[in-house]
Length: 189
Image (tube, helix red, strand yellow):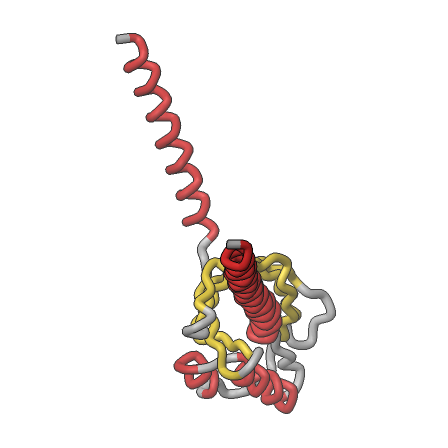
C-alpha cells in the first residue's frame, strides 16, 4: 500500500513537473513573439521616419547634387513609387530639407512585411540663389514594405489634406451634438 501511494505521489510530481514546464515554455514563446513584434514595429517606425525624411529632401543647388538626391529617393522607395521616382530628371532649382516631427504606425503585418505610417513633416524650401527658406508643413501617409531583414522602404506615399481632417473633426462634433440633443428629447418622454 505504501509503495502504491509513493508511486502515485511520484507520478503526480512528474505530471506536475511536465505541466509546469509546458506552461513556462508557452509563456516564454509568447513573450518571445511579443518581443519580436515590438522590435519589428520599432524598426518599421524608425526606418519609415528615415525614408520619409529622404523622400522630402532634395539639394538641387547643382545638377550633381540633384542627381544624388534622386538616387537617395530611389534607395528609400520600392515598387511603382521607385519606378516613378526613377523617371525624375535632375535640374538645378529650389532645395528642400525635411524633418519628420511626428510619426506613428497605424498598421503592421509583420508576416506579410507591410506597414502603414502617418507623419507630419516640416519642409524648409530654399529657392535657387536665395538664402532665406520658407517653411511648409505636410501630413503624409506612407505604405511601407519590408525589402530585407530590418529594411523597410516606402512603396506608396500620399498627402493627407488638413481640410479633410478638420471636416472629419467638425463632422464628429456635429454628430455628438445631434446625439446629445436626441438624448435630451428622449429623456423627457
